[in-house]
Image (cartoon, rainbow, N blue to C red; front, side):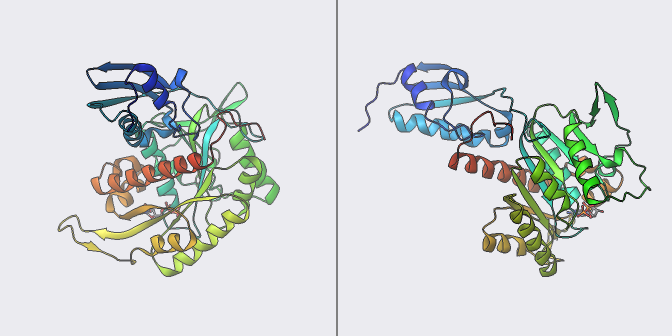
Length: 359
Ligand code: ADP
């Protein structure tokens, strides 16, 4: 039987065994375990984690409470308060980006909703309390400015391009530099140069996540990214039809072939839920991406139904309004949560050093 004495140092020691949900390393008790009070068998503790893991903070709180209950079976009640810990990251790659996780969102082909989903992930993570930036690397057809209703030009201060901010989210896009009806023709080296510039010369600040909206299909931009930065992973957006799934499989193999691990697959336009009768119609089919993800050993992050709000609001630059729709909000919250949980599980399996070396 575990008969450990319930006291402050023992509770602190128990909490110090937990893994940080961002890095997978053990908590640093001097920074991450705050005040502990014990009152007649009721324990209150303050534990600090970074906003990178904010979407899974309730899970972490449960893990912390369970750790105390396991160590001290006689404890009556455990309350964990999660507070925010500031932890900057070392500049990454030759472009010196200070983002903890860098995630590319790609698709096998255009029109599956990749930009809509990438932008929605950014807005959802930001709403959940993370520091997120959005790079529209779809240099041939930048659609992020349109989805967010941003009609701005890039300004330069102190030699750095200032991202356009949307509700505190820094956004950078080729769409802020060329006119919407202007065609952009990039050759390989120019493309690489422009991606490198968007990463290096933009004043991104410290970020938990940089989400990169990739051009559909081709591997050129993905290759540039993988050469410029240690990429955390790639997400593939697809629709349920078999033919779309074939393209998605190619996109997964493209990411893998250049060393970008696939951290998730998302099925977009997955059924239509009638707002009048709540009946679900599987217009393009349903469940193909989940099955394919299982076959390919890729995490499945979730499904987003066909939704008129998404289509109508994003068309007039109000994508964020469509995320207020309960069906969309539920789908996007689940996807953001699953992504962060998966990254945290990966970190737990292979703990990272807190400050990553410059590569
Ligand atoms: P891609 O980046 O793959 O080319 P977009 O994100 O530009 O695709 O989306 C293509 C079109 O589909 C847009 O008009 C967008 O509003 C619409 N769309 C995307 N996802 C959905 C959805 N779940 N429901 C309804 N319309 C959607």
